[in-house]
Length: 261
Ligand SMILES: [Zn+2]
Image (cartoon, rainbow, N blue to C red; front, top):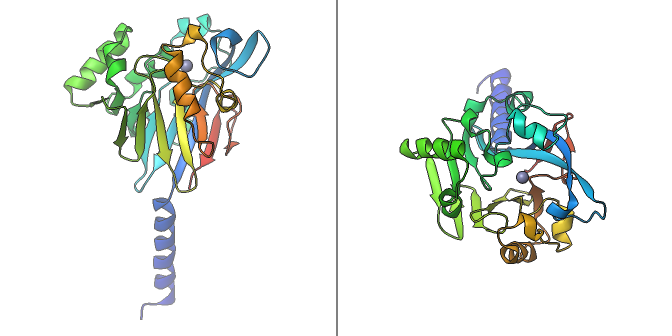
């Protein structure tokens, strides 16, 4: 029999490996705040202006840990001014605050390609990028189009054509309510199923109340309404601009952590 010390060491190692294998975490990274016209979002608020958080998400899964980004945020100073962003934090420093570097991100899934969701793509030149074909075909931003064309030529682009498809652990659902190729990402974690809604929902509470996007911020109100009506009440909704995220806790001023296992 091996000495007790060696046996204890193996046991600790086995336990720590088991723990790591089950690790499933979601980090909501908040890179800014602003107010915004209530008439441009789905909200329960009756005021003329609402407060928005500007978020993107990191999902940590598996052993060794894999890091998937849902959207990228943006950094362009001109757009920060235009949208009145305060408490701005660069994506690199937010990632650093949870021990990550951009090159550790292996996949970026874009809910859609608006500047605030795809603006930081260039930080992740080695990541696989996933988006829907209808979004790829409707690209208008020249920088995003150039980046995605380069990713495509390097074989790093996964263009989804189906209305529902499986991508590793994630189910990609073509919603098409906010933009032609907007998608939601459904992730079944051990304890809960999470739905990353992008801007199909600005606030989970409004979607739960069945409030669709206003016409001014929808590609198709009908498709947005169809998506909202089909939401499972048990699923946790994580939106692109949420101010009241659920199921976790703020671990610093800018990072909301959900332990998903
Ligand atoms: Zn947005």
